[in-house]
Image (cartoon, rainbow, N blue to C red; front, side):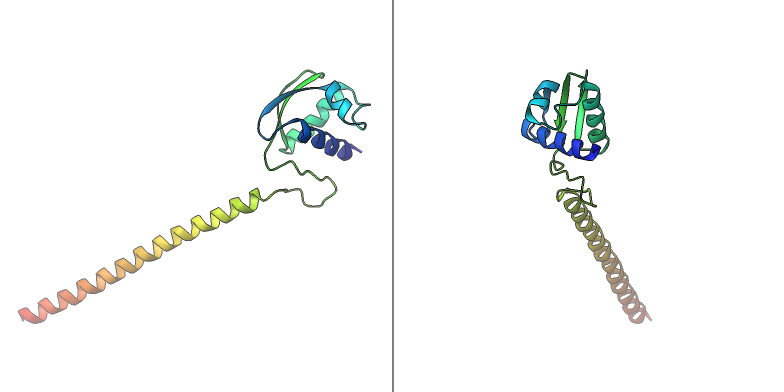
Length: 136
């Protein structure tokens, strides 16, 4: 039941908040927008906000049980408590992809540097060999 209420609260917040901006929302306003939340007390709403904040869906600046200063964190609006995977949005995939690309860039630089070192050593050895042959 708690998961249903947190999902309901998050969907109501998605209609009230724009991603990343703090908005002051009253408990009355939340209760008007959702029938499931209408029976909850301010203390219960605070608990639901705490759950959502712990999971990284919202940022709660302050609350007094009747008013909440809350921001909906970007990329987390599509909360579904019934799915087995709770990493929503493509943010983790994009982040991981950029890490792979950055890793490939370092690998390319390392390979080019190593090749340059071997080529320089080989050319230096050939020049030294030619100088020794010419001198003696």
